[in-house]
Image 1 (cartoon, rainbow, N blue to C red):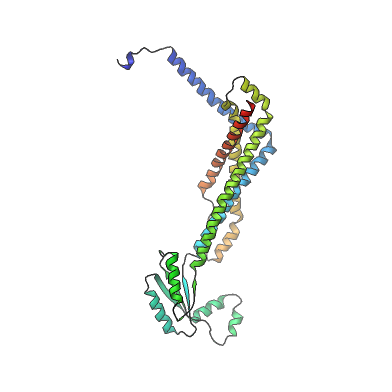
Image 2 (tube, rainbow, N blue to C red):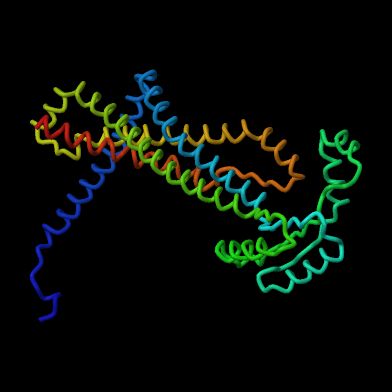
Length: 324
């Protein structure tokens, strides 16, 4: 038998749909009322609300500040350590011909991308440009500086291969000293890894602190309206109905504190703008320092609002179970 031949209660179906529509409209209306009422309640006690938002905003701004600092230190390391050059200082008695011969020999190694020779006179000219060395250089009878070879390894070489290359060069009889500029970069990367982990731990602790601040504020608010909540529960109001205004209060706290945290992070960027510009000038404009990405600044208020809702949800559920 086709479905249309089954008997249908023509009177009850429209009535059920109408009832569902009224319930949905009532649910929407209560959400709107809860959002507005909770916002008005925050405005009715401005000092307490501002203190709560300020504490949460500062707690959320600290991880952003550390993230900004670490990101720029990493960019500084990339700018200063983008060249993995190896400086090879020859014995003082090595001649120009011997330096060129050794440079040709090292340039034929598969690990080496390029080799350049710096003469003692070039080294002396560089020292003469440095402040404080001009007077001391005039007292020298001869040039004591040796020939220096500047080796540039291939970019795809790992730390182990570069370390082996440095070891091989140090074993050569005409070599006095080898400086590997990539070593400090490896140490900086290790320190940055520790810093990133520390920022994650700190951010977790501060997020927990913000969660506790919201939870305690909502707890105090619920405790102050204990009798009103008891009456609502007695006349049959559901738990979701009762706690909805407090959830919106948590959302407002989180949203405003997230906006404050983003503004504080932008303020930190502006405060550091002039010193950073001077530092970039000292490196001939090669140092590129960036700020926090726009998507992160926009995501912070939304994430903070979700955090506020979560804190309010936990505390309100616990408080309502006690009231029931």
